Amino acid sequence: MRKLRFALFGNIYQAKKSLAVQKLLCLLEEKEADMYIDRPFYEYLVGNLRLDIHPKGLIEGNDFDADVVVSMGGDGTFLEAASRVGDKRIPILGINMGRLGFLADISAEEIDTAIESIYSDAFSIEERSVLQIEYSDGSPVGNPYALNEVAVLKRDNSSMISIRININGEYLTTYQADGLIINTPTGSTGYALSVGGPIMTPQSQTFGLVPVAPHSLNVRPLTLCDDVEIELSVESRSHQYLVAIDGRSESCAESIKLTIRRAPYSIRVFKRPGTSFFRTLRNKLMWGNDVRE
Image (cartoon, rainbow, N blue to C red; front, side, top):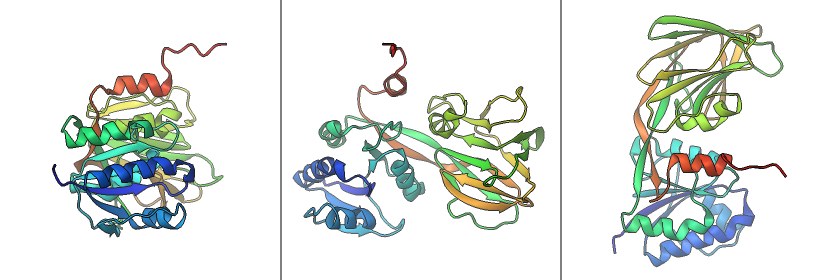
């Protein structure tokens, strides 16, 4: 049997899901896998769930290597794991411990078959595009990469903001809105979907521009090829605005312009046999189901 290294990341707020965690740990022990566990997750498993586990090592920051990354939680946990993986090219297996879960789409009941499929090479790997953001003043961004979206938003209770947008140097329009979401296909089923953005298939090589509560009724979402460079200039009465990168918010002065493009790497996601994006849409969004009583 092949010796594989697994890096485990997990949600530390779901004690009721402890059986699924124990199930995974037992399977990996049976496979004699080398387990590396993110330190906060390890401390939670040992301190809160009282599990007796003996990992090969603990993960500190982003300094780790593995054959497989396992994310145990919802899509938020998956996004955090993806940000830690970065450009390492390690494929991620998302085990759903949350609610909806488009990224973390392996249920607790499917853990056995998912692990077996990894050892038997009976899986496929999807490449998911990533966004990269830069500030015009050269100031560093905490983590400039987003698997889902970059959102430019008004602060707190301030009035709407003006967002001037250029595509490859050409002026497109100025949005008067509460914000603007630039999303990848992966992010099209997240925040962007909740404000009326279109769903994009993962391999469509597109970006979405989705305004949040636009002032004009004739403003609609726009889909672009992902080889473009997007430049944003923001004006606000408070002279500040928020930049949310996969939910990680930072405050920006309105003098700072943003440049957003496709990152030079992608995130790799495990997909089991028999699964598809369209099947996930039907199951998660209940398409075709008659919910009338």
